[in-house]
Length: 138
Image (cartoon, rainbow, N blue to C red; front, side):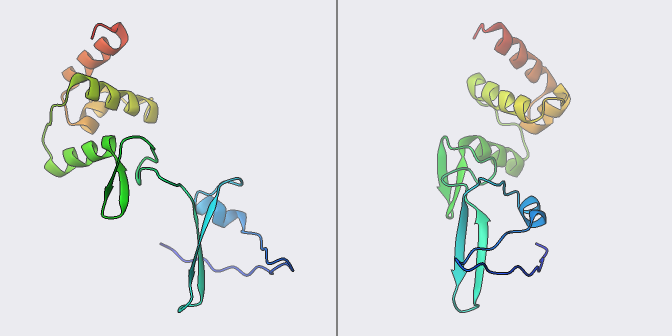
């Protein structure tokens, strides 16, 4: 993490403006909620965008599991398992179809081969899932 130092005047009610450069670098939008952390020993105040109860990786709010004080959704857990095991893990077609739909939304211009690599399955399996998803025969 790179450190950026800027000086801003403190207004009488205790407010200050966060520079646009910092907002952009930290992915904070104008109407986002902000968490404030104070370290009294170090005399520092830390700000971060508040994301609430959501997955650490994709910010999903569904099917969350806590792992070492971090919330992770079932889809990301599955993806992490595939990467960790580095082998094909076959899931029910409904689960694979949902994962594929998520990838279609996140990477709309990817090829079937790229989707296959992301899911750890063959390109033929992607083709079969795609046909079944759009034909609705499952």
